[in-house]
Image 1 (cartoon, one colour):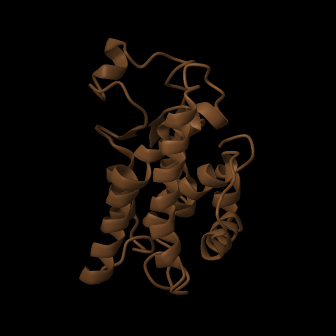
Image 2: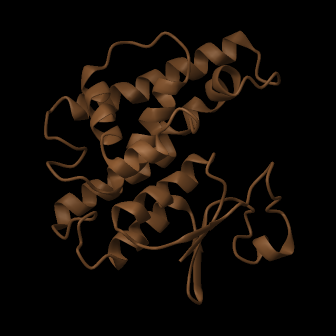
Length: 206
């Protein structure tokens, strides 16, 4: 399999982490600015949105990182990362959707301002608003993890933990005063204890 995308992308790292958890061989090609502009015919033929990652599996290709996670988990014959039980599976998909639609959007301004130091994001009111919204969503995650079941959907590690783990990494790497969230901190450190988690949640890839 081939993965098109730069490792500085959190969404690319989701896919790479999953592939490594499953022991699936892959090759990665640098795409995405500033390395390689995806808005060229070659890339747009694979993903008309011009976004990374793209997964290529033989004569099949697809985009959208969380959909790729589901595809890979289904491809893995061990079934380790996506439960077959309907209710547990539903909760995995629930948290994948929440990560993409509820948790990620609030952090945009704060991450650009405080982590990436982008001078175009210097409005303090917008930074504060972004941090407040982000903190509220992380509070939802903290409450879920505080139930003490081990991972986000019970005792077993799933693809939802890959997506949420990388989101936690971005939270802890962004410099601002944060409320204490002990369940989230414990969860994050345990995910970083996994070999693939440690690789894709390093200091150099926030």
